[in-house]
Image 1 (tube, helix red, strand yellow):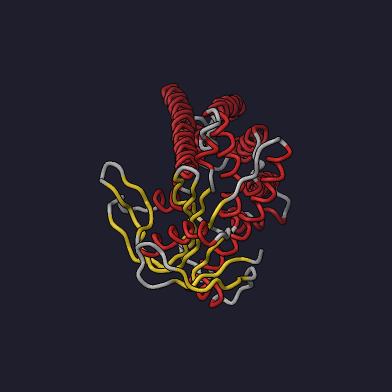
Image 2: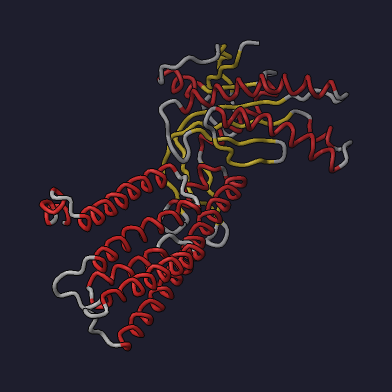
Length: 389
């Protein structure tokens, strides 16, 4: 606004116009620099204070120029409409969300305003306002300072409350994820709909694993040793399940039930489950090497993998519910794991899981056909596969 109005005066070297334009350019340049600092997250306390000093330069150079070179109808600086900029600058100090910054801004502009009034005494013959107007100006200054400090204090408090709420929500999500898996926890916490009982039809892969002979072995262990050994084993196995995108649905003693495709489906869920079973075998061998180095007997487990339709959802009561999967496909995976004992193999994979995995067009561990087996509670025989020895 000033540039076109003062263009001719600038060309003839009018000092008042040059002071005003240069101060405004300094303010504009520092504003752009402040935006860059804000985007980079490098706004420091001294930079906030410097921004208030730049505000003071812009305000008091402009107002000082009006006092130094008064216009034709000048009646004292307190009568100038531009004086409202001082009060806005004081309030603007509070927008920095720093209580100390608000106090610094009030002190800075208090000194600037007092200097203006002292400097304005050179125009005594032009001043027409009364002492009461000086009192009103002081009252406006005090009100602006209070508003500035209140803005800084209240807004900072609200920001901190919001930040604390976000931290608490993230902490709750992480801790909830320890119990139900992060994927299920995130889905539950991000949903705007209230939690309710019920489920929906899904197609997913289920993996069951169970330690062989661990119950009898555990009878000879102290509770502390039992928990330590079981947790060490589960840590190794769950890491391989999660590496393939699986979700641990539950632990049943020393058994693990993992699901691939819940709550989010993928075209290669069956392949992920099969690869996870292979990785768990490798991890078990590595874990046994560590156990034997500590004088502990090796562990053995059985794994069953199946792919098919199931129901996924909240099961239980309104007071206590669990997100899980149920259905014949889940039961079949569990019985495949049990059948590894009679088949004397570590892993049994259903034909449905093999076909679904190969349909995804991905490389799989080499599978060996084991023919058909009969499973308890399942009338038709099941074609199964296992890994190379």
